[in-house]
Image (cartoon, rainbow, N blue to C red; front, side):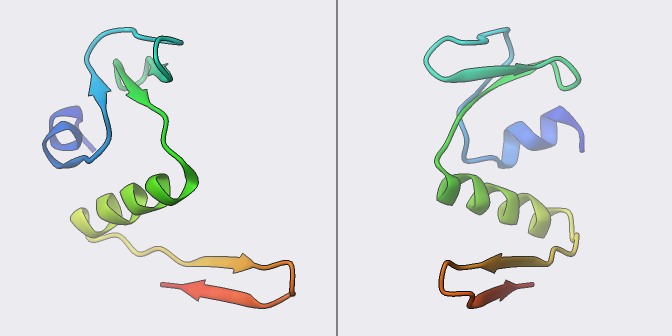
Length: 73
């Protein structure tokens, strides 16, 4: 996925400079950008957003402490 498309469609805080370690940013050299970390819920929402945008398919299984399995497709 091109960096420009990510920038236009993301809800995450992204900078086009190496901000590694500053205010929660991690630098990804393969994308040449820094992304600020999010909690698990925010990260999953962003993954689902980009999956839908690219018409990909995703299957997620989450096993709870009660051994109940939650399925998302």
